[in-house]
Image 1: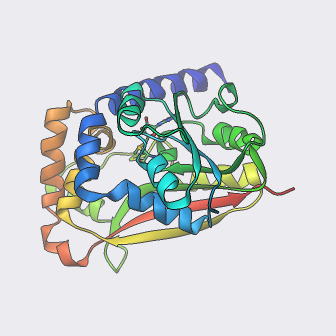
Image 2: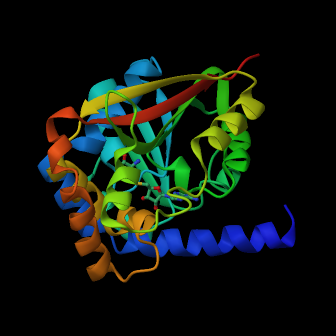
Amino acid sequence: MTTDAGDFAKKVKGVVRKNFNQSAQIYRAFEEKHHFFYTLTRKLAEWMDLQSQSRVLDIGCGNGISCEALRELYDATVFGIDLSEAMIEDAKSRLQNDRIHLVVGDGEHLSAFFEAEDFDAVMYNASIFVFPNPKESFLEAKRLMKTGGVVGFSFYPRVYTSENLDLIGWAYEKLGLPIPRFRTITPWEKACRMLQEAFGTLQTTTYEMPGSVDFLVDFFSIPAQSASLFPKQPYEERAKSVKTLFETLAPWEDRMTIGWDMAKAVKKP
Ligand SMILES: C[S@@+](CC[C@H](N)C(=O)[O-])C[C@H]1O[C@@H](n2cnc3c(N)ncnc32)[C@H](O)[C@@H]1O
């Protein structure tokens, strides 16, 4: 990595960490209402064909909802790592289980924390899109996986009609607001290319759920998520902007889909 790229990555991670440190409480309230991250973890794990009693590395585990789902649904032993101290603190306060291990750390520097060839699976549930260098993380994850192990990620949401109209873009246009140039730090195509380069294989799918204004307002009101839509505004203002943006979608309420793209790969011999 060049010094410029290194500086950029450091800066991005500082912002991401700060945003998620601000998010822990709202994140928990969102999950209590929607049970969403638990469901998304289940969908990703099913599609990855995760085996019962696997040892799983959960990268960007947040406040441990994905760890909890893997533990409960797959009787897995889970190792969670997250950049945000507040998210890990919340996870520790909720989950006291001797088969869930949590650590504060950078998912792009995994070798400092984990042993080689120790995991049956590696999962990034709704986290990889805020990593500046997914390839570094994928290569390290591969080293930590057993041969035949599976890695998978779920991505940032798309909101669309049956004609594939991007409704988030539509809402910005309707309100006469400038569309942010990037909604994610790493775009979907780049994350997929990097996974393919690291593992030599790749499969993708999309988990689709019916869209609702209420869900979208709540999801994007999480401070870290709102920063992806209105990056320059302070949080109070962002929360208002999010509400206005998604309330514009009320006419589409019964006709919108939220798509969560997913990618997976297997560590070949
Ligand atoms: C949307 S949350 C998802 C949390 C969890 N996987 C779940 O399903 O509830 C994304 C998490 O990724 C974490 N994250 C972002 N960049 C990271 C990095 N470089 N290393 C470790 N964690 C990171 C954030 O701190 C945040 O907690």
